[in-house]
Image 1 (cartoon, rainbow, N blue to C red):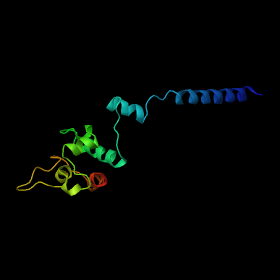
Image 2 (tube, one colour):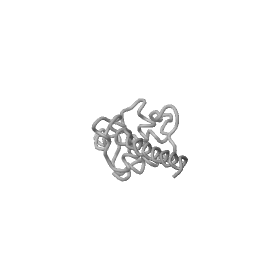
Image 3 (tube, rainbow, N blue to C red):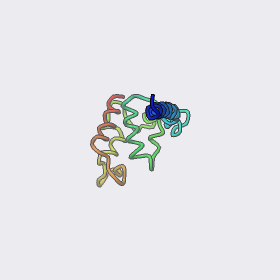
Image 4 (cartoon, rainbow, N blue to C red):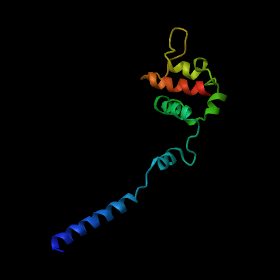
Length: 127
């Protein structure tokens, strides 16, 4: 075996060892990021609720704490009426409710996309 071949084999072995060792050093993943954000209590709920919750995080959390509440707490606070999105005050406010005699539209700045509205609608409809 020539010197060049030995060097190539050594390089390959070192490269593989480096790759193996660095892949074992991963310390961040979605679970550890959830723990950083939510402490020991990561959000729980149905897939639909967690999807709606992500809308609350992006659109409501600057002023409100909806994203910190559970599904049951949102129902108990009368923000949502199970199975009735169009009668739910939270959904009503999010879908262009402002007008002469109506409450202020939310969010006051920016918009909620049709997809985001549909996500919240679908969640309330499935409760």
